[in-house]
Length: 249
Image 1 (cartoon, rainbow, N blue to C red):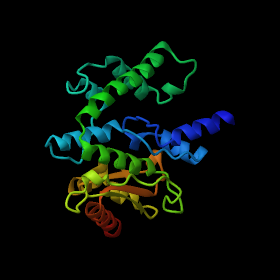
Image 2: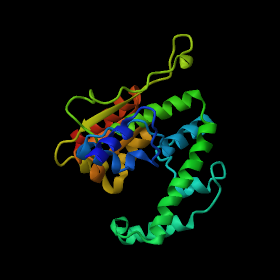
Image 3: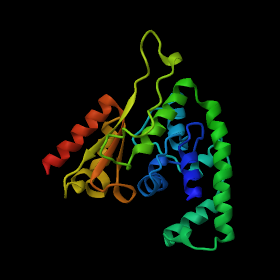
Image 4: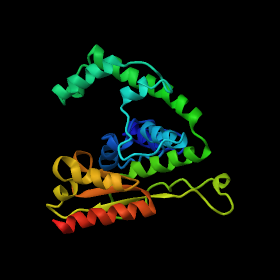
């Protein structure tokens, strides 16, 4: 019990930052919330940071601008190395989804886990050096929104830590950077297939039409909800398109 309380407090401390790779795909977040009531909030998500750096450097944001951990390591701007052992683990994981559940851990498992942590820390320092004050704030803000994904409750996240406010130095002539929101869209029974479409064609088309992140619960969260993150205008646009698909078919 003492260990649980200690871990819970440390996970939620405002001055302790967690560093996942693609927090929206992390199963730890909903597991901690629903099993232990732990609300992850302070995260430095390398996928979000990568997308922000791409935008900051003038590259257009696409509907599928994800980069794999192996790809990130291979990018000379961040590490510039090949991670062959990670590829080997991926193959084993595809062959056996229970790969990480076996005990005791094999030497390969220990090395892969340790290398993930070691490389993430290296990438973190590289990314922090590239981000400016504006994108640093967006990294913190988006990370907080992603942490709320899948962790649905009945009080609209009223008991969660407040979202990071806009720093004063980013407000110029009374204008602040455009804030983003998280919208949770309920999907009626039997309609999720209409939203996803054959081989994901419909949801991909909607993603390409909106500058917003659209996430479906599935195995990571409530299967009857869609989570949308982005600027208010883009989120409302995505909501309208998704509702239209539910009505059309």
